[in-house]
Amino acid sequence: MVGDTAEKSNAPKIRMSELDGLRALAILFVMAFHSWYFLHYTLPSMEVFLEFSDTLPWIFGFIRRGDLGVDIFFVLSGYLLAWQLFRKRMKTGEIRVKSFYAHRVFRIYPLYLVALGLAAIDVGITTDMLGNLLGYNIWTTPANIIIPWTWSLSVELEFYAIVPLLILLIRSGKDLAIMTTVIVLFTISWNYWILSSYPQIATHSFIDSLLNGRGADSSTFYHLLYIAMPARISQFTLGMAGAWIVLNRSAFLAELSKKTVTILTVLIILGAAFPLTYNPFTIVSGWHASIIFYEILLGRTIFAAAIALMIVLLHAGRLPTLKRVFSSRLLEPIARYSFSMYLFHPIFVYIGVVAFIGLDKVPTVSILQYIGVAIITLIGSMLTGWITWRFIEGPAIRFGRKHFR
Figure 1 (cartoon, one colour):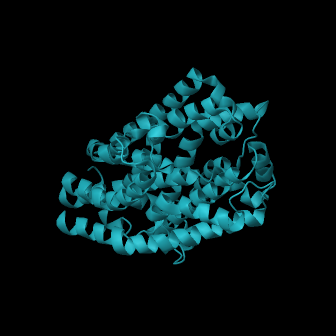
Figure 2 (cartoon, one colour):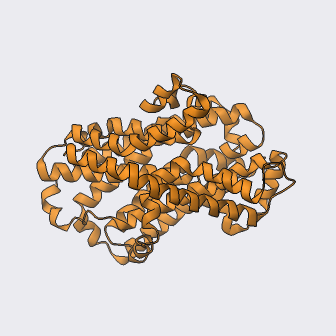
Figure 3 (cartoon, one colour):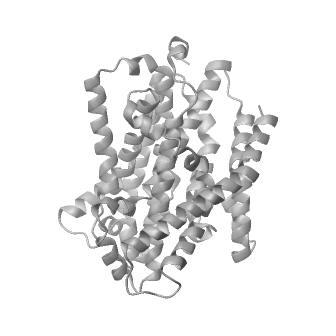
């Protein structure tokens, strides 16, 4: 690879504790989001749920966009997998595709099979299981996603299928720039095509369409703009680009002036903060309509670019304060158990709802009840994560690494 040898000695070490912290933040976002969203099942109507949501203090405003935690996972996946494969090629001159896929299988499927087995107790064993196992269920109909929130896992599996090929195509900075540009433009073009074909879905965000009873619009949005691989692939690709830059341009990153780092930090804040804090109204009019359109068209790509840039600066040691925060030992176990927490946390959302609200419909819920649900979700998910890591995930990962080097 062009430039690999010149800067190999300057590349950061393989340990990435700061990225563990970012992974922990991602799963906390997702759990906060679902702890909020699932509360609508306890209330008499969507209007009441929206009234509750509007009473949340500003500091809790991000939970309505907590699903962006999945976007962070996608950027991290692109970065970490590309980092491993680029380093392997730098050291050996090749990529061991068989080992790559074997490691992914033993990382994902043992616990995923357990989750699908538990789901089968409720829905039975059907042909839809195959679509979930192979990750093509997101191309058929959302109803075929047996565990609804595992749509993201299907997107991940599709990315795993093509990432070695993408790595092989990148031999220089020019190759990287071309590939990244093409894929980002592809995502934006896909989004524009869907918005042009279904202009009504640009008047509401996905969540607000769903909560406002616009079932057909929310279904279209979900299927074509939320879980579709074309709408998500740029997030992985931007992560991959970040990995290449850190490995091949580490000296350049080390020489960035403080002013340049400050400017880049401002760009990160702008790119990440707006999607996280802008909560669109249920009924959109005036200038909000334009914001919704462009947020759907570009928002997730800009957010992913901001996260990828933050990862680059973190891993290159150019954001030392943030790196210390993300490297906290308190966040490490959350990051380690994040896959299990993602798969099983809705079980504990339900338990939290029963504990703090009950099974019957209630006139309203309070912020304290929401916090209680979120705490139960976190504690229960971490306990489950500890168990599954010790008895399923950890042994499976070690087996894959031992037998497929």
